[in-house]
Image (cartoon, rainbow over all chains, first blue to last red; front, side, top):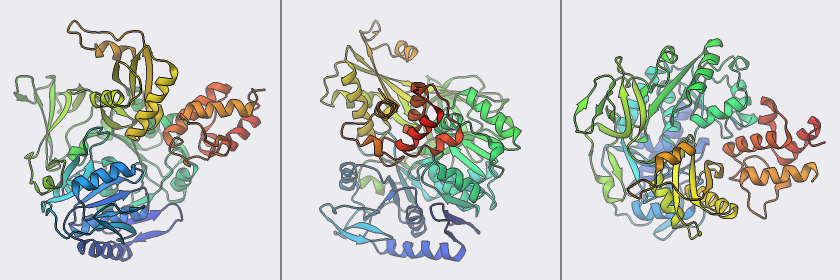
Length: 467
Length: 79
């Protein structure tokens, strides 16, 4: 089964050129042939929001060559650490000097090609590797099988009613699982994807909406904050009739506001829930149920199921019981990989994902997320382990003293004891640089003394109340 | 402080710009700090600082420091 359904079309918003039908298939097949000629191993694809990046991904998928999608804006040193750990056959879209053991080459654009022919044969089911977002520790990939990617693309297309008439823009990075899934679910159904790099805050994006009669828009919570700031009015864009939201919980007042706007304009809004580990979608609230089930992540996708695991380890689907959310479905990852050797591993999960989220089901099987098992924050939709983030600050070499980080909506608040504005700014900048996220995502504040629990540990709950 | 200087410090503060950035010649998405997230923070900061409200077209057309400055002048901000 291919990712390219009949009628699938790519449009480059920058110059209006189109790639469809036989032309598109030929281009992808050509790249697939080039990739098949590479030495054994996975392929790294440095991925920007542009047509060559999309073609490289499609070429690898078609060739059955496992591909890791990496942010093209990633630091060279981070990329080199990943190259050393996973020994890819090639790094597509690479620029700059090739590292030791690689030579500069051409594979659908500039690439580094590994000189040594020997390497670990990746598991035959493996298709896509995605970095776990916001990871601050060792490099780590989520291993997704071909079947997981295809079944999830199909399930999303089904619940969103994606057909060949749909025209979706790339409003999210393609190395991000949500961005990848928008691409997959549309191409699979023979729809059009408009490759547009500037995003909703730029004039070119809205020009593309008008020029190419874009029908849907996908966003994470911060996109909805942007659209609110833009005083987004769907009545001004007659073609745009579907908006989808995932990547973290959106404030309920904004869900209501956008849902009302879309319904008034004859359109619909979908709120969805997922994780990269599920390729990525697990649940979608049907558009007509959004008002009635406000705050819900939705019922499991077709082919999937939720259960709640309570503290004693028992599983239940009984309404109202809170515990860790377990998901079962054909889209669950094979596991993680931290080294080249682990790329050969088969499925280690058996179709069960322990989400790390706390939640409950209602009497209709709708999931409501209530919190996280681990201390996780989100910065503009990217998951960040708060303990790792604190460690990063402590190891920064800045004289920060005691550090405590807590989640605050789409940002993280970092508390420092008795430190001036210069240090606080330096900490925000350091985090932005190290984690590749915008500096405004880190709100570094001063506190006289961190509140402590009787155990002497930081009282994070009290800090969250202040954040 | 004149309008241009005030706008300059608003840019530096909202985008977290380091020293040595040629603020007056900055263009949207030209540097990492002025991405879509930065743009949202920037527009909010300018609205606060100059007590103005931009409409949809102004927000998406604010593609450089100079354009922002012209918009503020047209709005008669900072007089």
